[in-house]
Length: 206
Image (cartoon, rainbow, N blue to C red):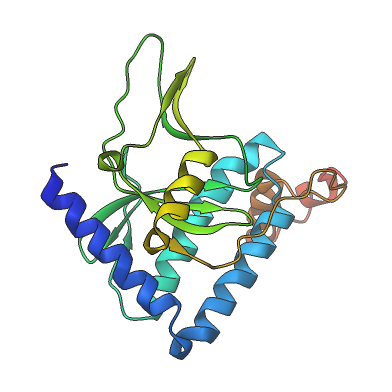
């Protein structure tokens, strides 16, 4: 992605910020915040399986929010991009503990990955943030991913608040005793939809 496209994605983020802090859309933002809270607290990503489900659901919910306030957002599910906003592709990443590393790109073996996507970050206790590879942020290769530390994002928005939308993102609970598992809920839903008489009786207790 060339510099011109980063300029377009930066401008689009500013448009998004302008609308999300506009009081005209207060109710839409409140619904989004409530939906994220329910998602993150019920499908706690302390359960590894839930990380993929929560990530996908976050992408869908953000698309829904943007469409509700006048943007044309599309969930695209591409290898390196998650959504298009007015035909501009973005990657979306979440961190629900407000510290540590965020995986930008998963890698295999000795592959060397390069961050090349404008990225919108959802970070607990911080909010929604924008960053791209032209902003001089440090990334790091670990054994199976290219990562960026949340400190880099925090430093960026401390220097320039324009890359930050102050919407509350809940923090996942550390010691939850009631974590739902996505695969269990899908299996239960399937059995209910087929009006199961026999199998549903043998679902494991949770």
